Image (cartoon, rainbow, N blue to C red; front, side):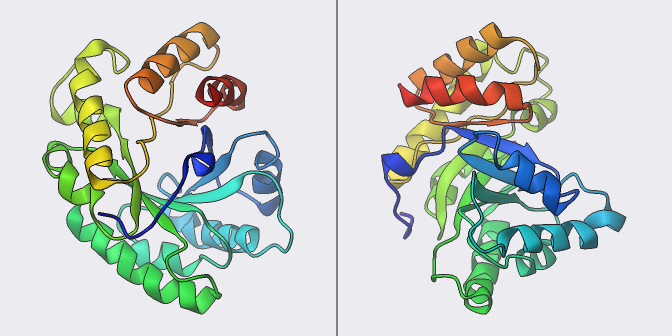
Amino acid sequence: MSDVTSNPADFPRSVLYARPDSLESLNAAAQLGADALLVNLEKVAPEELPAARQVLSDFLSQAGRSGSRAWLKLTLDQHDLDIAAISGPLDYIMVPDATLTNLANVAALLDVQETAAGLPAGSVRLNALVEDAVGLLSLREIASMPRVQKLGIGRVDLMAQLRMTCDPEGPEMTRFLVDLVVASAAAGIDPPLASLYQQADNDEGLRKTTARLHSIGFFGRTAVYPQHIAGLNEIFAA
């Protein structure tokens, strides 16, 4: 079971992806109403990563920063450099392609970086993003890893590996989604976080699929479109 505790009042309803292009862009995104701002290093071009990490560091170290709580999504293979950029309060790290090995590595790196940044020990929690069949079969163990407080699922990558061609919002995915809910409950961690809705301007589709995810035990959802924030906040407030 995770050694990090949480409570329902702390569950984010909406988690907005943001590129670390500039300090100004992150500060603006933090004022859009999402409960959390997910600074995404995973999709940054390799040559741009040093500058992006500096933007992240500047964002986190601001005194009196307001708006959305800060999250970070790591790169796939430079976790040490990503975590070295943590300079101030951070709620969660999303670990893509989560495995027992990389989760243990991230937790160990955080033990050192929290001390270096003057953060309370154990304050940064992990959102383990399961994106392949091995991860699905290891859910119970992943949910019990140190610092892991929330699971997530990368449906597009998972479906590609499984050669599934169905709608990622369709009922064919229900079994995998419920597996995350069960593993989370068994480990005593927070409900899993749902992955983003891919259609920008389909509010009815967003609300319908989000309500369904909420009904099977998910709480909160990522978003790339600011216009999705209000709907997510409303549905998960119920």
